[in-house]
Length: 93
Length: 164
Image (cartoon, rainbow over all chains, first blue to last red; front, side, top):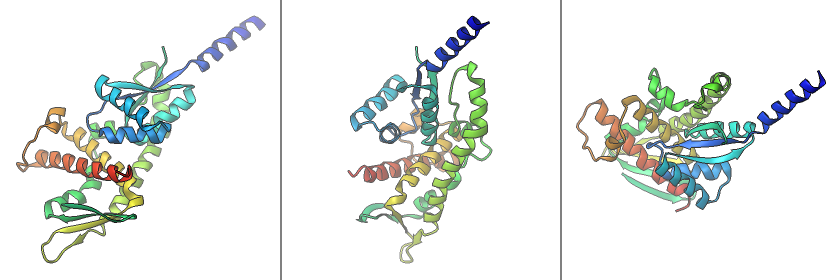
């Protein structure tokens, strides 16, 4: 019984600790300057870093803009949706 | 149309001919997805593409989407209030609009919302948005003109916000 409980807790702990990516997808309507500005505002990124992610979205179709704990990743996705960016949450590989 | 910054607190759009003034007045209505499923789907996009995230998608619809709707609405209310002060010059019929600098963020957001909703509603392709197509009349052509005009305004306002 005790061993089973410990195993369940370990599994649960692993799931919670899995890093999550916040991914922004390309949308040809959103202006490039607007997308960079949103990254600066939401994540506090420098202009240079924000533009690097914006260009990655533009050229590759998506960019992982942040990785970390699930709860915070969800909050970031919500903020990005508030700015009407196409953002999703996905488990980090 | 002329764009100016007479002081630190204000930006002014002037010499707006009746068509451009009408396009400005149409921002709130254009930003509203109304009964367009595609516009609504674009403004309230899914937070995950993973089929295993059904709980997240359900919670998102129930708790997050209403909050997002409030954020979107607050920007539109700022724009509506400013548009009520749109001034029509008696001598030439052109319009002038003064916007407080502290309201530009709301304008940038509202214009973006309007552009996204219009593109989704009319299913414009990337090529259509990039290609120069003259205004030929009709609802679709007018919507494309709106998307372009709102994009120009967004760029102008963003430049001011960035201090360039």
